[in-house]
Each structure stands twice: as C-alpha cells, then as structure tokens.
Length: 292
Image (cartoon, rainbow, N blue to C red):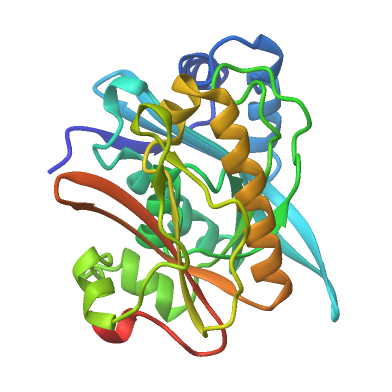
C-alpha cells in the first residue's frame, strides 16, 4: 500500500503548499508559478486541485479547470488539466498515476467525459505515464505553445507540446485504471510483432543519441518512433543536440498527424540494460495490443 494519501485541496493554506511544489519542480522563474489566489478561485468555480500527502507533507499536486472545446457539432464542455508536479524526492513512486486516477474519478462525477492537457513529447517518463499508463491519445502537435519559457526545465528550447485527449469513459481508459489494469507494452511485444522502428538511433559525441538528418517516409499502418530515453540529461550535456531533436520530432509528428496517424501507446523498457522509449502511432484500427 502507498504511504501517501490523495485529497481535494480547497483552503488558501493548501494552495500555498501547491505553490511550493511548483517552485521545487520548475525552479528559476517565479512568474511561472500559478499563485494560490488563482488556484482557490478555480476551486470555487468548478476547478479541481488535488494533493498527494505523506503525513502532513505535500509531495505532489494536479490542477485543472473546466473548459470549452469547439467541434463540428458546436461547443462542448471538457476539463483542462493544466499542471501536475511531483516533489523531485518522490518521483517514480506512482504518485503521478494516483493523482491522475483521482482526477479521473472526480471529473467523471462532474458529468464530463473528456480531459485534455499538454506535455513535451520528448519527455519519455511523461509519455509513459500519459499514453501507456493512463491511456490518453494524441493527434495534435502545438508549436511553441507557451512561447519562451524561463524556468529551469524549459528555458532555451521552443515550448512544443503534444495536446493529449483523455476520453475517460472509454474501455481503453477503464482497462488502464480499473482494478485489473492492462499491463504496459514491453520491448518483447515489439519484437513479437515483427515491427521495426521507423529509424535507428545513432550515437553522437559522448555516446548521446542523435536524430536522423531527415524524416523517413511514412507508409505503414503501424509506426514505431524512438526518442531519447532521458531528454533532460541529453539537453544538459549537449544543448545543440537537444535542439536538433526538437526540430526533427516536430517535423516527424506534424507529418504523421497530417497523414491521420494517432499516438496510441508508448513503450518504455530496457534493452541490454539501456532504457529505450518508443511511441506507437496507428492509422485506422491497427494496434500493438494484439501482441500482448
């Protein structure tokens, strides 16, 4: 059993703790912190802020609010999940998944069926949580979504983002968040499928992976595209290489989405001791799940 609890945040004191988490997760830019007064106003007007606590210490939070999306049939309500942060000392312990699962339950009680949020598509751990563990999908790439960001994680690179769709009443999501959750895909599933990544990663200076010079031709109904397993480490060691990855994956995903592909899964696994991260993009009804 986890040694933390999840609860709804409603008081000014709770929101101040959420401010502190933001400073720990995104250091270096006070102007990028969502202030307590905004969090409390959202909470009193249909928004949700949930906190994870170990005893009295907040170790993570997720914040979202009601939104409107515009469809061919007219506007419809959704929930916009704007921010989730986990104390750096408590990462990789399931806290993020627990917060999103609690959000899933709360938003369903509000009568909504759709949650959206954004994340950097080059962040393997975020992709693993959002796509593989939670069952979100993506066919929307947003260039420089937040302009020039100044915090320690994002400064210097274009703030390109995936906008994901989390259809919270679907069987796909139920299979991942239910009591008998669907296991995530492993490299053994990829090998069993007979599929190969769209391109092979080559090692550059310092053994860091570098992207291909050009985006390969996209034709198959099922695609595997590999990204660096630890983009933040790569960025810290070779900033120019991180920019190359940003612009390569921008062209890759924009090309795939224009051709009606959808990101439907993510594989984050180890091969010969080295972690690897691969997106699964599908066209039509193709899926890797048949190989589970």
